[in-house]
Length: 440
Ligand code: SF4
Ligand code: SF4
Image (cartoon, rainbow, N blue to C red; front, top):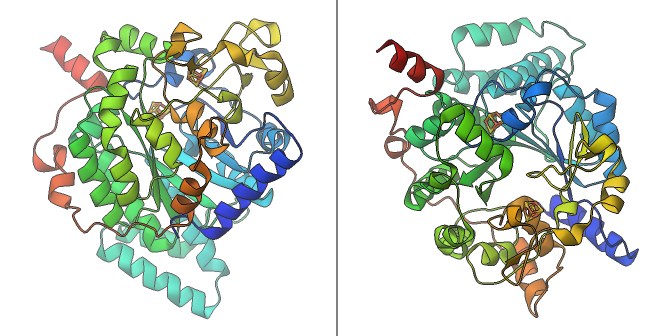
């Protein structure tokens, strides 16, 4: 099967249950942002700009868990900021799993190997002889493949620094969701730091050896070379990555402002318009059969310009330090509690936002800011909930979900993937480049 049966069944049962109860609007995925602090400054990231005044604030653990209970979405995507910086990320992940949710941790991967080493250290002291042998075997493999150092192995064998601190172990309900926007040269350029791509790949390899589930998420920009992405998906499929999400990067307000103010770049040279999105995603229908993309064939047809969908941003709500963001992940309107653009509860968000004011209908943008948006957050739920259904959609989706999982393509190449700093083709980016330019 393309996706694990237990996951597909859980999501399907939730959607059918809501439909049978006649619930018109409900959450399918909660985008939970427990903090906006990040260790990177990626080009095109609106979060580090929009929430620059609350970068140090974090949501209390109970509020995070309460938000998931409140909207009851079967899937929670923990994002941010960088969620692995959140001080209680382990307790949050475990708490959400205990609530029976499917958890995606959207990470830039820089702290993933550390978190996995912490899990191994705790696992080892609690292990019986058989498990211990198994873990020792894995330590040997990780050492042989340079995924941990001898010092890391010694630290793991010493046991956890704090035996009471929870850890994040492999689970069929949890995915590391690694941000990857291209092969080494391009990814490092976009995240404005060399070495990040390499760390992502090391973390993915380590996670697969330890039995974690791994997904990747990719945003497509104007200059994205789709042939390069194909090479990236070939490589990732050979690494055993379990699935991918992909979405077009469009010029939403906060990202545009960051680009102009911080980098002095013109947003129109970076982000996709609607027409450019369709052009870029022309081969999506071929890709969805070749690689394991998370999503529905209907959304992929929409991206490829084969059909129209309306926006259902209410189904993928965003909860952060300020509340429930209105109307969507990308835009913040002067509504909500004290006009902050955030509501105190999901039900207030659902009731108070005039959802008919947003999206693009029959080619006409109801709000000019929505004109170029064809993102996963707005349109994937429209497809998965069958809101603009056409005859045959249900069977198409069932065939897709229950169909065979695409096999690794066998075309991945380390030499092709590491085409940046590792092969002497690096570039200096971000603050360092600015400092050198000034000095020069
Ligand atoms: S895109 Fe993610 S990793 Fe990059 S700066 Fe924004 S929050 Fe951080
Ligand atoms: S189309 Fe929907 S998801 Fe996109 S910006 Fe508009 S309201 Fe937000």
